[in-house]
Image (cartoon, rainbow, N blue to C red; front, side, top):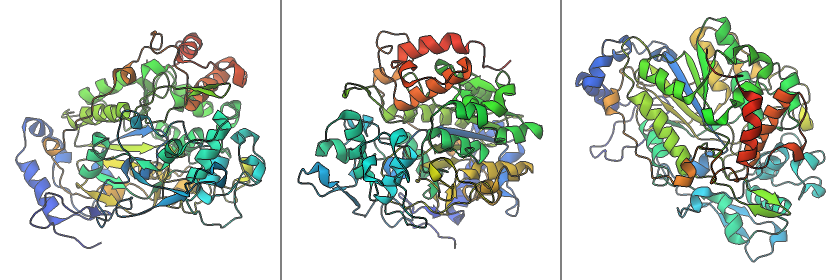
Length: 566
């Protein structure tokens, strides 16, 4: 795309599309580097602070990649109003987008219109209850189909073929989000939702409500066409992110299938074989890193060497000891700070709500970004030679208006997978932000990208063989690396998170306030997967603890000594 100069009044500059380098942005970055602060001068002895030839491979402009993967939000849900209409960002601004209300609701409302969230404390918990996210439910969200009709109020594991899937080649209409949210509400609560209860599935948080996420999206590069790998839930997409495969699975359960048959090699294995350093960081409160369980058959040898806590992460950042690739797991269990919507426990169809506040996740992002922004090691990792990628596993049932495209299956030919899926179409758009010294402010990457971009980027950087056909020809992250002179960290924004309610900051699973709180669906999946791993027995639904205190008491002795760097 041709270069676009900023107008004289650039208080609200138009975004830069794809990987263009506007002249004024280049000059700003150059001036910032020349007028370095003490922090920048500490970094100036590092070659990454110097001007780089424009012809050099963009992925060579960083030495350390850090990825933090949050949970279950669509692009429209978190960043729909990030830019005004006409600024090159495919969001919700300037559009009137609706979804029909299913006829069985019969409350006088024909449709729900996408809107900014009102922003009350209660809204910070929305959508509540948790939307449906397994493969059959997402088929309904994308295509507005329930097939057969008996699937309407069934749980995903009880649904019948074709699992609400349309005929091959059908284009998603993106008109079934309200329909599926109402279906899920009835299935879990045994009654019809009110208009105020179901309209939240179309709500979008504003920049003022999530200032850290929005500031970083505007100050660096935001992707408006990043799609998750599978139109389904967490474990499948997290598996694809690091393996370009989910071993044919499209739903989380049963758990032992991941532990016994998910032998797909990961980018961690490729890096290990190439002599590159990597680490997965997780919250110590959680006890078990989710990534270690998902890829247990191939990552088990590294549980005691390559899995560290967030305390290790902050220490490694401060001392310049980040590995070549670092993957961060938010706290996904025991009062999560991962953006996941609340998932109340239902007893006889009566919901017992659990906490879930998006401000806690925005705070975590602030802490991770701030640690990297202020890192100043001369010889090791620092702000100038580190790229931070902020992304999500999948959309979690939250509304998005852009139809996912087709996808390259992992295998050629691709065998039929679980629930008849051939992995030939991607999942829904998710928010993704690339942050680096070589990323121009207000960059928008419009090119379609998907989860294999991370693997493709690291493979390109280190000369690694592809893992599957999915990542062999996948786009990489080079569109977001569009400056040839580093932006001094002293010019990066200082993020300011909103105050977080004290209840969302409690990290003691044994406390009187937290112990009785019910687990959401993802937390139960993490606990169930850990039970299967450490007991060797597939847990029954009834055997999985229902509260934070019970789950912590069960997992602590089961997992003692299994993880942690030595």
